[in-house]
Amino acid sequence: MRDSKEILDSWDAYSDEHTDLAGWPHDDDAYGLRQQRRDADTAEAFETLHTGARRLLETAGKQLSGIPNALIQSRWIYQLDLLRYGLDRLDALQEDWLGTRDSLPAHAQPGTPVHDTALAEHQAECWSYLDDWASHGHILREINTTATAAPSPLPPPPTALPAPANSRPPTARR
Image 1 (cartoon, rainbow, N blue to C red):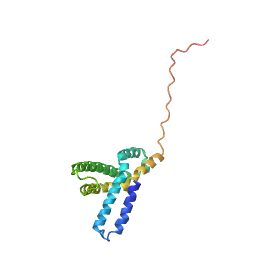
Image 2: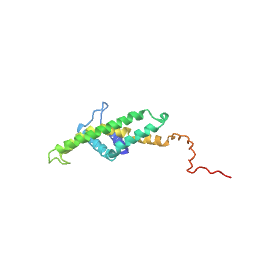
Image 3: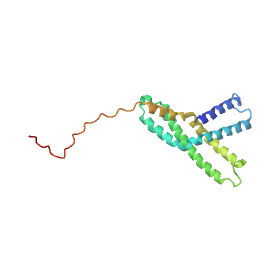
Image 4: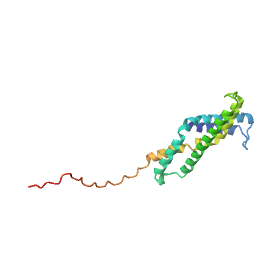
């Protein structure tokens, strides 16, 4: 997530410098190429997180349910939903990409215009969801930190155990 955030910050700086006050690029071609690089870099940075992302979301949801209400940030629920939705969309887009990639002509290997154009389009579709993860993924750490620092609920008071039943009847003393 840190790499994605750095990519986003770098993109924001580039975009601010290479667009006019209305947000239009000074050079459409250069801007488009830089945007493709941003999309590809962000997708690559997310790959290491992607395999465990669903588990991280599940863990955060469970942790959130155990945090006292007074410690919960109201934005966390919205942000978790945003991350879940983004992950669902990324998974669906990945399935679409695999179908698209498999339907490309045999000569459309990585590095060829046909392949690279299709990949760039796929990465552009993914970017807004990857951006959500870069912008909001830090809440997973916030929730974990709060959950581990939150006071644990008090255990119930011990119950008195009944006296063990003696297997032999008591003997009379003389």
